[in-house]
Amino acid sequence: MNLGEPLHNFVGGARRPARTDETTPLVNPATGRPAGTAPVSGEADIDAAVRSAQDAFERWRDTPPGERQRALLRIADALEERSAEFAAAETVHTGKPLRLVVREEMVPLTDQIRFFAGAARMLEGRSTGEYLPGHTSSVRREPVGVCAQVTPWNYPLMMAVWKFAPAVAAGNTVVLKPSDTTPVTTLMLAELAAEFLPPGVLNVVCGTRETGKRLVRHPGPAMVSVTGSVRAGTDVASAASAEVKRVHLELGGKAPVLVAADADLAHAARGIAEAGLYNAGQDCASACRIVVDASVHDAFVEHLVREVKELTPGPPDAPGAWFGPLNSAAQRDRVRGFLERLPAHARTVAGGSALPGEGFFHEGTVVTGLRQDDEAVQEEIFGPVLTVQASADDEEALRMANDVRYGLASSVWTRDHRRAVSMARRIDAGIVWINCHMPTAAEMPHGGFKQSGYGKDLSAYGLEDYTRVKHVMTYTGT
Image 1 (tube, rainbow, N blue to C red):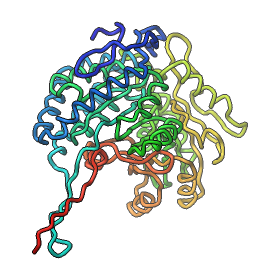
Image 2: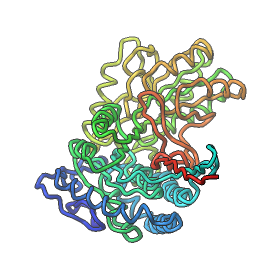
Image 3: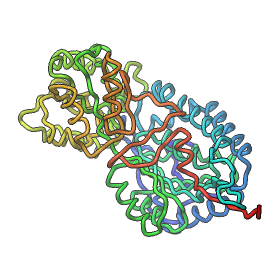
C-alpha cells in the first residue's frame, strides 16, 4: 500500500473498491496538508463484508485453538518485522513522534497479539460433573459469531489489535470500521493478516460515523464492540438493542489523579505530566484531572508547570518532542473552546494557546483554581490540558475523584501503602495505578465503569467477552 493513494475496503481477503463514489479526505495533522482519500462505504459494502465474515465463521469457529494461535503468532512476527513501515504510516495520519510510536505502541501491540494467541488455548470453564442424579453436565465456551467493531482515531493500529485479536483468537470473525481520519494502518494490518488467516476472518470497511451506525444496525453481526465517545456508545447500545446484540463499550474518561501530602512531588509531577501530555492528551485514560492535598498544592503546581514546559510538542521527526498535534482542526477548536470558556476563578499557569504555523499543535496547558462543577473538571477535553484542584483531606479527594460521570482510569500518588490500598478500593474506576499512570500489560484488563462503558479489553477477561457459555447436560441413567 502506497501512502497517499486512494484507499479501498478489505473484504474476503482482498482489496474491494467501495460501491459508492463518496470519499472522505485524509489530512496529515502535523502539516494540515492532504494525505489521501478513503471511501465512504454504504449499505452494499457493509452487506458484502458481513456476508464474507458469516461465510468465514462457518470454518473459523471449528478451527482448533492451536491453529488459531499459530496464525496470530505469525501475524505478530510479520508485524514486528515490518514495524518501521507501520510506525511511519501511523505518524503520517496521527502526527505522533515516530520514536514513541515505535517504543510505546509497536512493541506492546505485537506482544498483545502474542498474548491472545496463547490465551486462545487457555479458555477456562467449570469441570464436567454430576449435579443431578443420572445426569452429567458440562460447560462449553463458544465464539459469539460475526463481530462488528468500531475503532477511534487516537490509537488507530493499537485499537485495531485490541479489537480483532481477542475476537479472532476466540473463533469469531470480524468486520471492523476504523475512524474516518485514520484508516490506513488498519487496512495495512488486514492485508498483512490475510497472509495467515482464511479469507473473510478479518474485514475492514472505511467510512464516516454514518457507516459505523449502519454496521452496528446490520442484522448480521451477533456482537458490537466500540471504542469511542459516550455519545457514540449510547448510540451503539441503543441501535444494538433492537437486535438484542451483545455490546462491548470502552468510552470516555476523566481520570482522577490523587496526589497525597506525603507523595514524592517531583516524581509525581514528572509521571503525571508525561501521562497527561502523551498523544497530546488524546487518551481516555489520560492523567488529566489532578486532585492534590491543599498542604502541598502550590509546591506540586510548581513542579508540574516545570515538567509540562519541558515536554514540548513537535512533528514526528522532532527528536525531543513528547507529543504531536491534535487530530484535526476541529479537535484543536474543541480544546480551544474549553479554554476560552474557563470561568473567571480559574488560572492558566502554563501554556493555554494553539501554536501558529503548520499543523494542529497546541501547548501543554495547566489550569488551577477550578471548582468541582466547572465544565473543564466534569467533561472530557481530550487535549493537552491538565487541571489541578486542591482537596482538604483524603475523604474530600475521594469525593471529588468519584464526582464525575466517567469511571475508566485513575491513579494515586503516595508513600503510604495503607492509603494507597484504601483509595484504590474506594475509587470508582476500572483501573487504579499507584505511583504511576498509563502502563498497560496484555495480561491485565482495561475497561471502565459508569459512562466509561462496560466490558474489558486485553487480558483473559477480554477474550472471554468474545465468547458465549453453553450448558450441555447428558442423561446417563445412573
